[in-house]
Image (cartoon, rainbow, N blue to C red; front, side, top):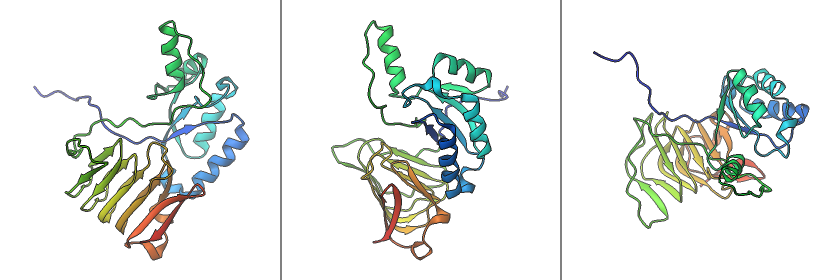
Length: 253
């Protein structure tokens, strides 16, 4: 008899709002400014709140923060690195309490359990998003001593490629609905559609190169630009994408 459902791991990209101050007026202003850059992209987008970068997470009024997020069209789905009280409050509000890999708060808790007095870091670890296997995930080549991962076949809709170290070189096209990520640079020697994330370990020096720009979204070190914001003169053209003064800059090759 066929089972009525199954539960499997899948892969989704969920934005993380990492707070560095607790003033609601400032947060609201900056959040509105960010949303206004790409309203259609953020509309009904899920969002996780990371409290691990705050000197004192208890200063944040979680209920007011979530209301502010909802006003901007986000759907809050969970928190991470909150205090015990905030975790209980989040559960009462039907939100997930998540553990981010490499988070500062998690490492300290593990140290206490082992009887080790962990020294509090001045800054949090770089954020990382879990990349769970997908049934449509493309098979990557075996690891070699090369500095880059090279893919020779097209990356089709629904496929995801994640390179945790080094550059990614695609000697074909990236289709609509596909997603590619790399810690370093990304080179696409064909048309670039879908979504592309370079420097996804906060590498602000990472760059994107492609022969035909038609992407849905491009991102370098977490700073992004959606298709609607691309210069019309560069659509479908060979381009070079990089960060400049914390903004995406697209120039012709």
